[in-house]
Length: 469
Ligand code: FAD
Ligand code: MLT
Ligand code: ZN
Image (cartoon, rainbow, N blue to C red):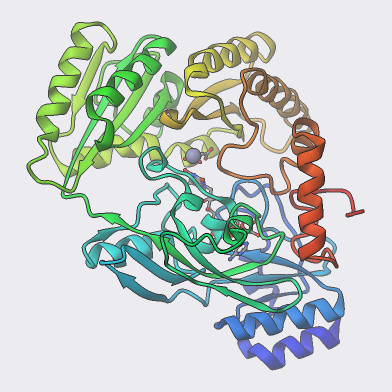
């Protein structure tokens, strides 16, 4: 082990971290639920150096855990506790290489944060469409590796939908340069799509070319109160028909989520209700008439009883406050006790059933549980989260969490849904993949993994558990 660390230190100098205090931040996941050990943490600052790190680790049989901003929610970027894994962080590879407003594309290194990309492309008069609450820290490489979705996926798609080209260091240490920005390129298999969503198990994404969109020039945000689950779906169907191309976000919050946020000092702009929906419309045309469109839409929805109250933001500050009720949920729920996350999706038409059945099942079976669902309702993606207050770290909480999970995932699957909508499998959902996915699908995934990573050193124990046969 000393030998391999010596070689890596010779290669990277201070970019090879062994000091436990400095390494600490790379060894714990964002939720504070997992803690691992690592041979060392590596921060190469070029693709060539990163490829050499991979070759040295491979020769020594040291596992590799790729890491971006370490904001993942399923434990994919945290090493296990064997001590025989090296974390390879992209934190020193953050350059935005080019922005092309004609081609509407950006090429950047994997460690660039989503917020960096948003800011740089906005300066060039364009929009980098991915957006989610961790965007200040989450990286391009991490977003692609997890195929992140977020709040504007309803309009622009998830990370994979925006992907044009990719550069990857493969498990054998070779560099694949597929950094093309073409819109059409049917020359053989679309390899880039294999790496997107592969959660660091097939290689390390070192750079990517992504699509841009026209920069929005007008933006309107409204917060609505509703009484029933069916009205949530009804509101979305009506909004889609009325404002289709202009909807950048339609986000759901249960009444319980807003009550939790209020406890943390946030204020709701509407009357208390069972359900809430946040709407954001944007357009790149100043004369799109979004405000009138939204006012008319909300007035109609109030009149026909789809909603019981609504507030239309009058300033940038009010827009921010409405968004905080939604975007702060992850933090608010983390502070409220042991938060069990269930990142699920169902066909949009089944969202009301999903919400009703999960709430009824959990409330009937688990006396102390707070059901706090929220999320990207336009995509049918609900974070059906459950908080057990004052139960952090107890065996009882773990057992309850397991049973709640079984209930939630079984309901989602029975409604034609999935147990992982946008966060991935990581370490947290390996058993669910084995339980719920078609064995043929799993077999194909394993064959791809075996073909690309024959030594099984890339992110071992993520996505799959058993050794590859
Ligand atoms: P990391 O956490 O570092 O890694 C995630 C996975 O990708 C790991 O398996 C890791 O090994 C792998 N990986 C990282 N970089 C690379 C690379 N360069 N090459 C290959 N593999 C790599 N996610 C959503 O989809 N939608 C949301 O709305 C959303 N909201 C969030 C809100 C909060 C407050 C938080 C904390 C998280 C949220 N997430 C959300 C989850 C998370 O932010 C995303 O999954 C994000 O894309 C992870 O990026 P990262 O750079 O932090 O990756
Ligand atoms: C979000 O949309 O805020 C996150 O993906 C959900 C979560 O933290 O559970
Ligand atoms: Zn989400």
